[in-house]
Image (cartoon, rainbow over all chains, first blue to last red; front, side, top):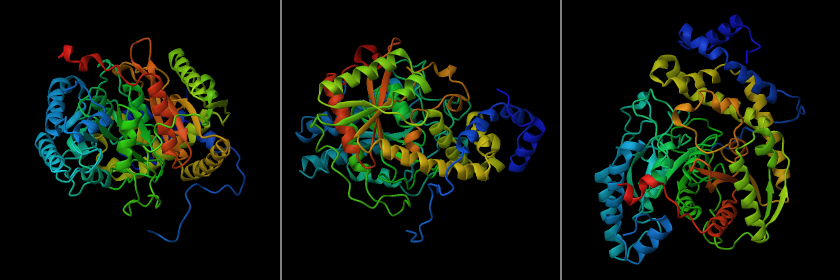
Length: 62
Length: 467
């Protein structure tokens, strides 16, 4: 499965992480990134605006 | 002395002075010497420590000062659990020389309970990258057929318990790493409720998904081990400050009156399992029904929804944990882990937060679904263990996991061996409970094991005739 993101845009995404990947290592991640895109689609389906994240801040830190 | 002991059997015999902890420990060390060259379950065998622990246990018991049911029981720890003065590597080149100054809380609690520590066990690298063949140690192999996978990441614990090298061991479970090896190695393994067992001193992978828990030969043994692990720990910010239940008190109560919901679409439609796996789950439901449980079918959101939410949170958090090393020592990781972690670095902050919001929605959905149920049932693994050299690099992302939904919700979930497949390897079912209702899972799992005449069949390579 080919990712929706272009190879050029993917390159930018990788560069932003600051990880020292070789050109070969970057290429190896491009196609699997389609699996991440598919997962992101699942979690970005509409939710009620008031749906809180599962992590909440508790002021009384132990 | 018998060839194999469960923890419960050994405990009874030790208490009645019919079994010596020293002799039991020596038998385990002998088995390690015989089998581990084929199984690679141990990264380090702590023979001197084990014999010292065993002699101390024996002296206590002879003096009438037993510390309880785990006194003198041989165990070992997954090598992400810190052990004071003993190398803790996470099966990685990055921590080759890491010697912690203090025990993790769970290691200390098991030591206080009198267990005998035999060593440190193989894991997928940092509990996420495996099976890998480019690490300082080879991957653990499945005692039912060493050419096959153990699942992971508690791979060494799975192999060591299944082969009888230890009677129980620690695992950790962020997306299924206790339940997977328990399933493919034919054991029982429980991921307890988030917060029940301390994670302090255990190398983190994903802060909101990580759980510690035990693997053992039987459900009863898991209950005994969990009893000594569970409890509030101020050193773990997620630790639940509440009393711990007695996990063995109701073990023999059976399942009469329990309400069990089968999430059939998870393993028949969303990610179809092998015929054998499916038929064994169906048979188990017949057994439960025959024993008096009420069986119904439950529909939840598609497994892919749970899986996507879980993996986005897990890989984002794992990336955050490892980012400093990824930037400075990228090529010291094995290929599998560094590539999986690098993908985590590509997930946007906004998508991570959306996953956290989705997580709460899914937690509420499960709570609602279980409002009139005691237990849910699903699969653990899609089939028997595949050959170890045929596990696809991205398998964990390509097909939705049966186990990660309950890391998301923090629910207790246990893998119970349900029989054997056509290839002679174990298959399993997963029982899921309400938060902090581990005792109900033990009760059901134990009833099933008893109805199936216990857990008699052991891996052929571990039998005396094979020595």
